[in-house]
Amino acid sequence: LALANAANLEASVSKSEVAVQPGDLFEISLKVKNRSPQPVVARIGHLVEPREISNFLDFVECCFLLPITLQPGKEQEYFARYLLRGGLPEGVHQLELTYDFSLLK
Picture 1 (cartoon, rainbow, N blue to C red):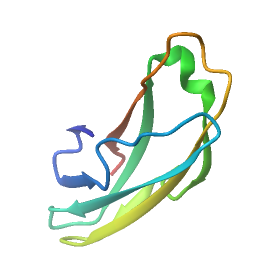
Picture 2: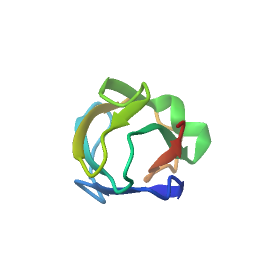
Picture 3: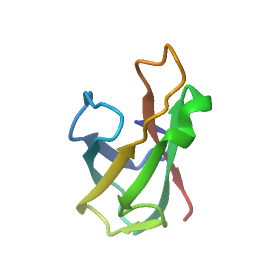
């Protein structure tokens, strides 16, 4: 999680590690809470490392591809389902997926 650009948000991820093989579907959920006294609109970006394998991670279903709106003091849970495609470059055994939060209003 990268929250440096979203100081009023608190977030947690359901799984810090997932073991998958190419061809596997996997799901991750995010709980996001607005700690500010007003509504917040935020964007949650996906950062994949190493970048050269980002095309091997497909978004099957993602509830936060569009900006999210959180009411004051409220927590919301968002789900994302991904597919790791086959044909990964030789020697790639791990990838890192970071959710990058930024406030829009």
